[in-house]
Image (cartoon, rainbow, N blue to C red; front, side, top):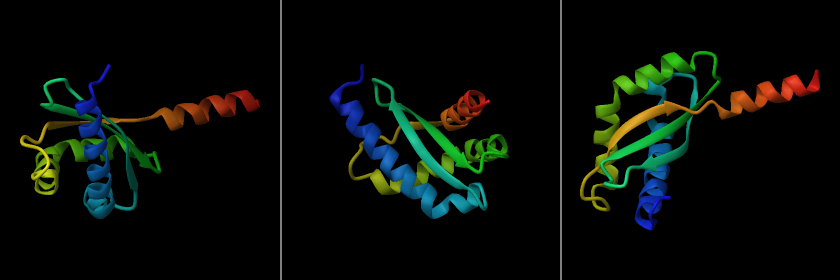
Length: 112
């Protein structure tokens, strides 16, 4: 169960990361759309786990690795945006959110 503060920070980070990937997403995954589906913040507010959906998803693993390699740059750019609202910008960990692929697979199985 997340506290009220964790939820607020999660929403803030999700909104700002989404905007960051909208503007600079071509650097990490050219020709792809990156969306931030969820952000979880640890209780000490030191780590934020961001779940990303990458469309089209054929090369999403390679795109995720490129994003993970540039985590420090993304955190720096995020810090410039939310620096006035947060004292410490949490460390970022990016994960692939494949729930849409999973749902699509189940839907195709049910149609058969």
